[in-house]
Image (tube, rainbow, N blue to C red; front, side, top):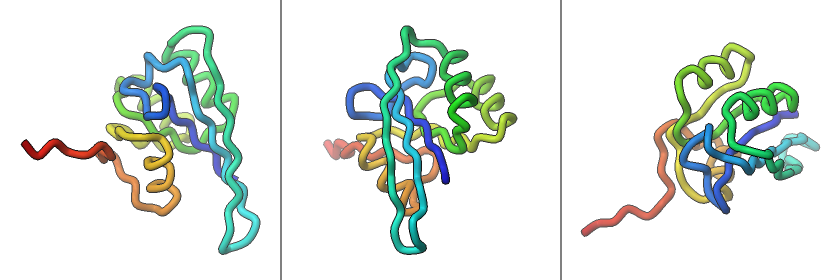
Length: 117
């Protein structure tokens, strides 16, 4: 079982880890080799706080954090606690999550259409 934390702003990955008040927690439960079950819940924090977000990650036993901007202090803390942090990622949360589940997500990816003007 794997648990993933994604800070949200509406239906997108929040631009900053420390300013998000809505958090998507995704639990992957493997049923068979070919089929995974995904369980999702949204947690709404009282106020934006990187310390509260880190406490939530620890209390929920999060293995992977997917986010956009995150201060190195919190990035390092989460990794020290055993979570893999994939940062500098932006785009609609469904697209980002699908890319992660397909094994194609890496830090620095942007899933918004690029303006070619």
